[in-house]
Length: 108
View 1: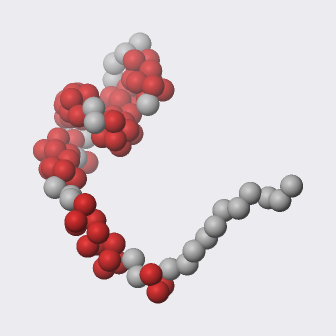
View 2 (view 1 turned 90 degrees about the horizontal axis):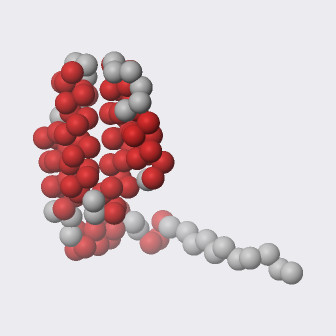
């Protein structure tokens, strides 16, 4: 994640323009999963607010995504319970159709 943050900081040294905004938006989208996993939701929200502003500036947001859609996605993720995961696993992961694989170190 540190490399993404450094890349975002490096973008500030480039001249302003649509290409810089597109790269910043792409980096914000790439940071979504790591920030979510780390529980850094405030940083995620701040990045998406900035990305939405950039996207609106270059006319990109209306065709690609909106902050409200991202927040709805986060709410849907938060609503997933361990029981729902177990139910889905029982429904879709049929043990009769599965296989087992063992990783064994080579003999010496």
